Image (cartoon, rainbow, N blue to C red; front, side, top):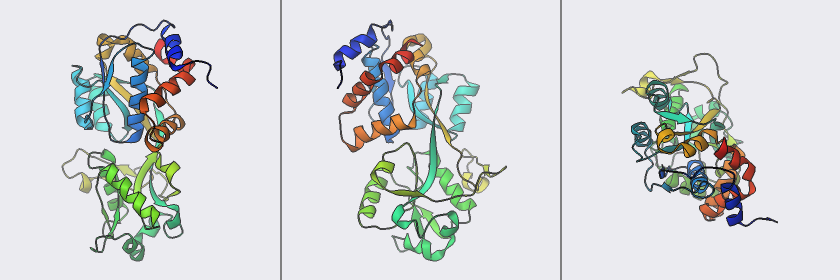
Length: 316
């Protein structure tokens, strides 16, 4: 049983000496649940124990726009809540390394793999299985002779990476990418799963799909020197890139505009100090988006139950 009300917990956190937050913080409205969950928790910290203002900007989900806004430092957008590396190496090099206009925290680790529902794992357990034309035909839903897989949303860098991987594995004569939004993909997966139909798709951890469904990883070759040579910025990115191995575990950052060190140093310090775990984020995702609870309520409860952690983030 909780011994403090949410209001009392917030008051206690505020009394630890954290200075009043200053300029309003603008957070993005990214399209995947992990980023959304982190955004709600950061917003609740800023508006609760820090006594400041924060807003999740509806529709602010184009990552290049977010990076450019943080670089500009005008307060139009201040934070990227879930920067997956090396998916956005070009943005890292431009804004963090070269221009030095964007800062970041210590990352948590995520994973990126190819999956099938576990009821398909007796037929598809490795990339080698995907070379079988009979297997590919099982995943052909539009009758064009090619199996379909979901590489991600049209706006994601990972979507290009998976197309490169299928080409590099010699699979593009049997398979084609079905590039649709994350919401459209999830609806299709739910329908397919309900009737035990084939699905092949990219996904990551942390994410609620791993709680909702029994999924199996499609095995890929181990990493070796030179197995990943990718240039996503090239005009002919598919032709000039190669990727013939499993994706290394991802470092996932909260990135924020360095202008916050002047405009709102207390929040900048908090963002620098935050350090999540995949298990925490997965718990938020399940409560907010699968159990359909109010995200603000979930975030406030987590803050109440983790006062020492939040205090460390706020006070450095």
